[in-house]
Amino acid sequence: MQIAVSLFPVIIFLLALVSLDSFKLLKPALLLGVISWGFVSAILAYPSNNFFISIFDAYFVTSLTAPLIEETLKFFIVGFLFYKNRLAFLADALIVGFASGAGFSIIENLFYLNQIETANLMLWIIRGLGTAIMHGTATGIAAVIAQNLISKKEEVKFLYLLGGLAAGFIIHAVFNVFFFSPLVQTILQICMLPLIVVLIFVKSEKSLRNWMEEESQSEFELLRMIKKGEFKSTRAGKYILSIKSSFASEVIVDMLAYIRLHLEISIKAKGILLMKEAGFEPKKENELKELFGELLFLSKSIGKTGMITLAPLFKRSGKETWKLYLLK
Image 1: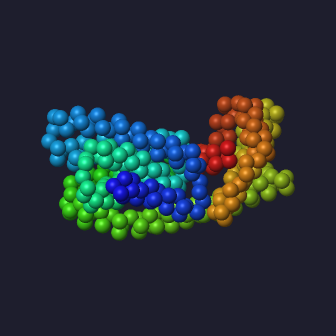
Image 2: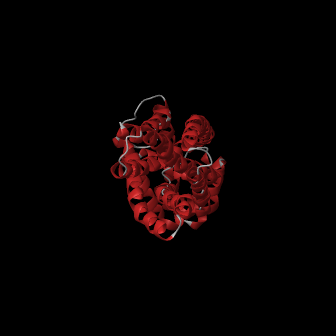
Image 3: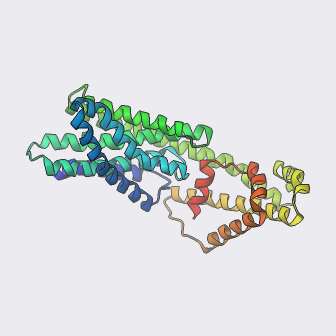
C-alpha cells in the first residue's frame, strides 16, 4: 500500500497531462528520456544534499540549498530541449517539466520507502500526493514560465531559462518551509493544480491555433503566387530580385526552389498537426524523406553565404525549427 500511494499519484497525473494534450506533439521516446533524466537528477542530488546537511542546519538545507540543487538538476533537461528547439508550446513545456519532476520523485520516494520503516499511511499519502506532485509541479511551472518568456521574443536566452528556474525554486522552497501543515498543503495543491493545468492547456491550444491560422494564410498565398508565376510581385520575390546580381543564375534558381520546397514542407507540418488534433497518427511517408533530402541538397548548392542571404525570408524561431523536426 505504501508503494501505491507514494508512487502512483504522480504517474497517474503525468498520464492525465499527456491524455489532455489534443495535439500529442511529444514523442514517447522523448518523454521516457525526460523521465530517465529525472531518475538521474535524484541520484545526483543525494550526495549534494548530504554534503550540505553535514555543514549546515537541516532547516537551511531543506528551505534553500536542496530546492536550488534539485530544481536546477530537474530543469537541466528542459533547458536542453529549449535550446534544441524541441518545445514550442506551453502544454508541451508543462508535460516535459512535470515528467522530469515525476522521475525525480519516483526515485526519491523509493529511497524513503527503503529507509523509513513505518506503517503510517498518512506519511506516504502526503509524500505521494504532496511532495511527489510538488516536484512535478515546480519543474512544470518553471518550464511554462520559461516557454512564455521565450515565445514573446521567439528566441532562447539564458535569462529566460533562469526566470523559469527561479519560479520553480520558489515553489519548491515555499513547500518545504511548511507555512501550513503538510496535510493542508497537500489538499491546497490538489485543489489548485487542476485549475492551473486547464488554464495552461487552454492558452497553449489557443496559441497553437492562432499561429497555424496566421502562418497558413501567408504560406498558402505565397505558394499560390509562385505556382501562378506571380512571385516577382511578392515581398519575397522583390527581395530575390534585389540580390540577383550578387549570385550566379544557377544559385538564384536553387534559391527559388528552396523557398518553394520549404513552403510545401511547412504546410505538410500543419496538416500533421490537424491530423493529430483529430486523433489520427500520421504515417511517415517516403516522400517526406525525399523532400528533406532535396532541401538539404539545395542548401548545400546555395552555400553558406546564400543561405545567410535567404535567412530574412524565414522566421528562424523555435516554432520554425520545431515544425521541421515534427516531420522528421
